[in-house]
Image (tube, rainbow, N blue to C red):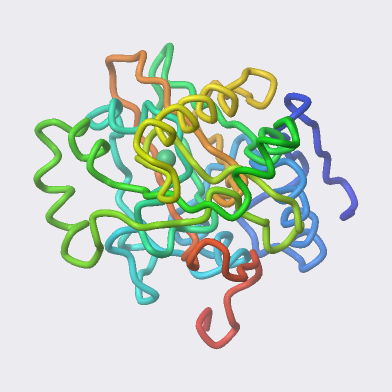
Length: 289
Ligand SMILES: [Fe+2]
């Protein structure tokens, strides 16, 4: 591990606070590898006091893959100038359901980062949970039944929760993406080799191989099981806090218990079809140049 870097775990299942790293400057390879391992080990890692520019944020993200401004309309040609500092309060009910980001897409992002620019005086926390821990804690007969099944992930409920902002969002989303996708219920993490549950209350609507009633019952059980507090953590944001999470092995929930502005900067790392190989690794030098 790089000298001077500290890693303080948050709960027994997920999350760590990283100290001794200044994201204003390009990071040495050894530090990037320490952070990469931190993401794999802890699911989500946090940094405090990162008063960085969007350009610096973007260069940091290039240590882990191809950054996109967001997942449904982003491209490899995106740059830091394409990222909006967004007031997430307007769509806060859309993300107040446990989810991995945008699994209704054919290629959901493999990682997402958030930086807090302006936070409400109270409320607006974000919670994360570890879907590998959730898998590990299932009974063996349940694991046997689930492994190999597939499930439908749909954007429909999320769009409906956006209320008056749904139209604009869906116009961008539907310009390039299908309404729903089918993904494995159980995902083997391509980097750690560990299995995780890849169904979420936000996006997963049914298990393809089960009839409707069985699918509802099994998904209801899996959502309740996965959302156990002992698989999760909760983060109270301060200005200039930043985090990056593994979207292949975690879910998150943005608590909508605030009224004032909540300004965040969000960047994702381009993904692959779940089940195919992916790796958090620096974008090619040619692209970064
Ligand atoms: Fe999200």
